[in-house]
Each structure stands twice: as C-alpha cells, then as structure tokens.
Length: 134
Image (cartoon, rainbow, N blue to C red; front, side):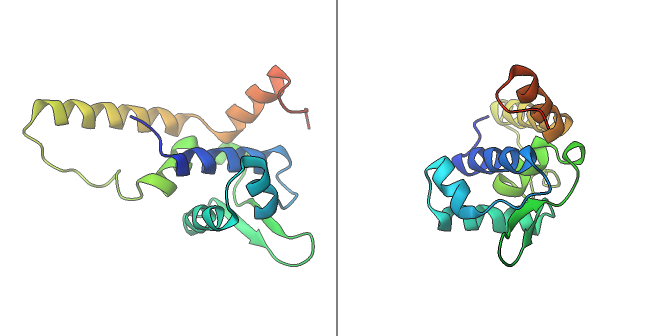
C-alpha cells in the first residue's frame, strides 16, 4: 500500500499542528514549510475539517488548530479523511486471489494506522530531539 502525496502532506501538516496544539497555524506557513500551493492545502484542510480533525480560527492570528486531543487522532483517521473516506465500509467481493490478498493487507495496514496516534508520533519526535519538548 502506498500513501498518496495528499495523505503525506496532510499527516505532515497535522504533525505541525501538534507541536503547539493551542496556537493556530496558517495555511501560508504550512505551504512554505512543505513547498506546496496554498490552494492544494485548502483542499486537504477542507477534507480534514469535514471529518472533524481540524477547526479554523478566524481573525488576526487565525489559522487551523486540531479539533481533538493528540491522543484521539490516529494516523488512520488522517489517511482515511484524505484518501479513502468510504473504504472502511465498502466491501467489494473479489474472486481473484490477488485482489483478496491486497484487500486483506490493506485492511491490516489501516488497522495498524488506527493504533498510532498523533500523540505517539509527537512523543517519538520529542524523544529523538526532532522537536522541542513542550
């Protein structure tokens, strides 16, 4: 299973929001950080907002913040919001053994991603010194 670039950008943006969860982060800042267009990020954040993972803060100093605590947002939530909003409920019968194998592996990967929270990743980055401890 390969994650899309949209899911990759979304996960990176969510991790950036996790660094200081109370402080709104602008799309302009994230666009510069990830070297992508603001319009592309707007599409990504529309999906994240639709799935209740982020909320917007209006006005001066506004931007986006996480809508839930770090430990309540899994990487699976982020990926599913961006790449595959209906994948968990859709069951397409496949008679081809190869398709069945890939469907099963995909389910296993998504199940694993559901067990990894933003808090887990944030804590790992803090421990490795890649981000400063709060």
